[in-house]
Amino acid sequence: SPSRLVPEDSYGMLSHIALSVTAYSLFTLAAIQAVLLYLQNRQLKQNYNSILIRNLPPLQTMESLLFELVWAGVVMLILAIVTGALFIDDLFVQDLAHKTLFSLLSLIVFIALLIGRYTKGWRGITASRWTLAGCALLMLAFYGSKFVLELIFHRGG
Image (cartoon, rainbow, N blue to C red; front, side, top):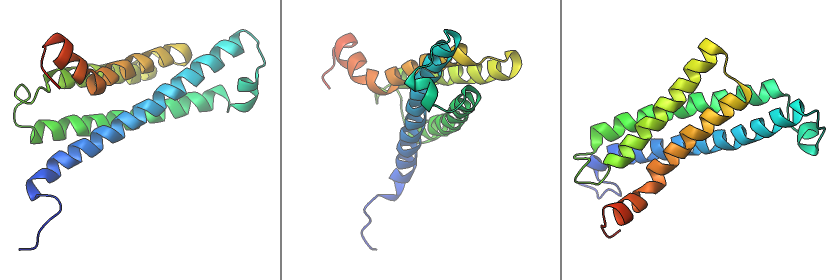
């Protein structure tokens, strides 16, 4: 049989990694969008006509883009979590429990944001804060691994 660059049994893990990186990238863009939306909203309320206000799209367009990024990120994060659950053998042996916990917490925050948007009309600064909170949890999931393993559990990285 011809040699393969990737063993067949690792396609599931590669799909998990690709979906995770895509979700993280979308949420990083959403975080940047949330900061811009927050600044734009504050400056409009203060009637401050800055370069930022003059050069950004209208507030409604900025909000729509934020929620499109969050929706896309939620879909990718759900797929990443599902593929992780299917293709990771043991969360505790592989030291992934905290990564899973923070990923699920961030997913809950993003879903709560979307529900709040459609049931309570959350927008502007509220949407920005929820987005940034979800992104902070997701950042802990992705980058907190080294911190958790080395400083809290005293294991070498």
